[in-house]
Amino acid sequence: MIAEVLNAFGYVPPVTDYIPGYGERPPGLNGLTDWLGHKFVEIYINPYLSTAARIRNDMDNALVSLISPSKQVSYGVFAATLTWDGVGDVDLHVYEPNGAHVYYNSGTGYSGYLDKDNSKAYGPEHYYISCDAAKIQTGVYSVKAANYGRAEGRTAPFRSPLSATAF
Image 1 (tube, rainbow, N blue to C red):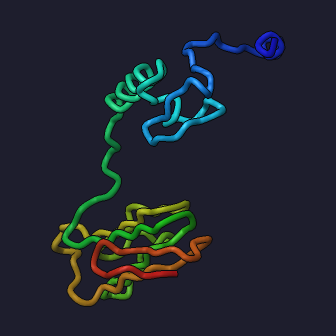
Image 2 (cartoon, rainbow, N blue to C red):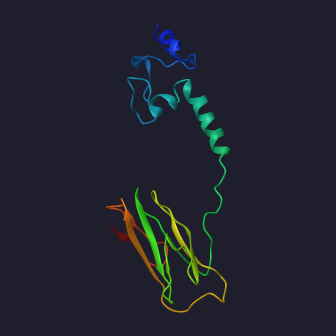
Image 3 (cartoon, rainbow, N blue to C red):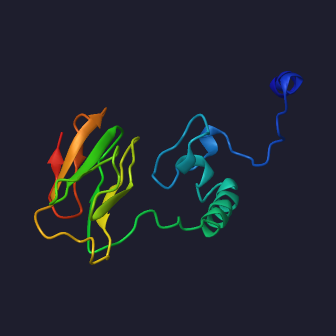
């Protein structure tokens, strides 16, 4: 009866797998049972139910079809990468020896470039100095992080040259 009512407003696909009733279902891989019959581990990849082989096959096929993402950052003689552990916007700021300030609003310095600026979550923010000997400056480079927005309580480790900073 429910399928007929739902079909009146759209389409309900036919049942493709039989899921035994609660009392007849063996526990899933985690040793738990699901009385509603909708949990992933307890039902869909439970090796004792008919759903498992098809779901695992679909997952394996999907994983094989994944394509590695393209390179998102450039490499140089020096690089600083900033990531953080959640949502919000943490910004990488690099001060070059000649005073140039490289950050999200000014991505090109004299020696280096901010080539990745993530403003949503997790990073990365990435600064690098190219291998162009005519542009490499000697001196002190200052690498800092700024909590631009909504990143309270986050830890933001640099992958070079500094250690973690908490906000």
